[in-house]
Image (tube, rainbow, N blue to C red; front, side, top):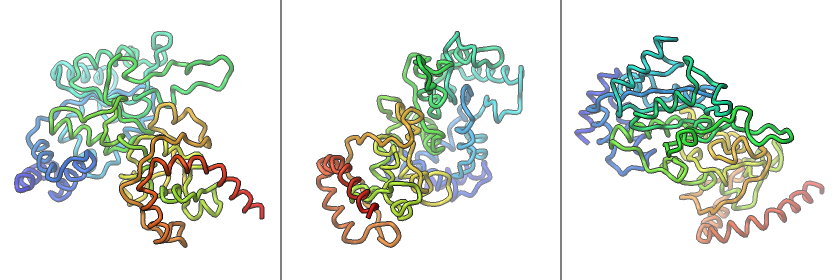
Length: 381
């Protein structure tokens, strides 16, 4: 820990931030990655000694929400971390250069850091009609992506658009349409090889930062699943650790926005929450650095599955989710009935349910229809 403190002091002085703040960032990154205790020391030393890796950040079919999300990171603020630890050599939204100067900066960074730079791609790539629907500096998005990816040490697709097509890839609800108007595709599909994907609309900035720091610390990217998503962030479904999970297991559901169940904080499954079929860590790390329970479901809106291909921007918002193999959460939230949470007796009952989660989940799925009828009958009375 002494080495970590010394490294943190050096970096803190360079970045003009508090040493404690930098150590907190290292600890938070280690926690997000699921690393063992003490890993923050390795992270601090890596950031202190590592040569600033060159980053080339491309924008295609997107709203820039991923960049905006990353710009609002607070541990420490992105301008202090990225501009001093990572050499951001090309980013159309943030760089001062424009036009020919911007293109020259990109090519110079690629040449000087051949085989060593990190390529980050934000936005889907239109493929129809040879990619004419997106051109930058006279080059199509397809050509620009392939050129930059050829000599990159790592390729990271940030956001659902770059990961699998996202919103631009949605198919219009007109007769005969079988694909999006521009043929929007994800980075891996265009390159024809696996890449690291950080899906979400936008994704949590710390999932990207943790991935980048892992590469900086260990010289390799974190373990990923079959879709290229880092397992530390996308290894479990959102539903498993949702603070409303206790209500799901107890059969308490909101049936309409603003009804009694919704006001009491009951489960949003019947309002179309896609948490049971969406893999992400939203329910465990929150969003926005403004306190606990700061994510859509905690705020009263069902998850739309924005990070899951085939769910987000594909299934209607109010369509109920497919229940995937569920396992019990690590712990159930303590609950008070008057505030829309469960009693001590309920918590004890839920602990018993956890012992047979798979069977319990299956039985619960079968009983959802019966609960609907009972609640509808009660409402009619």
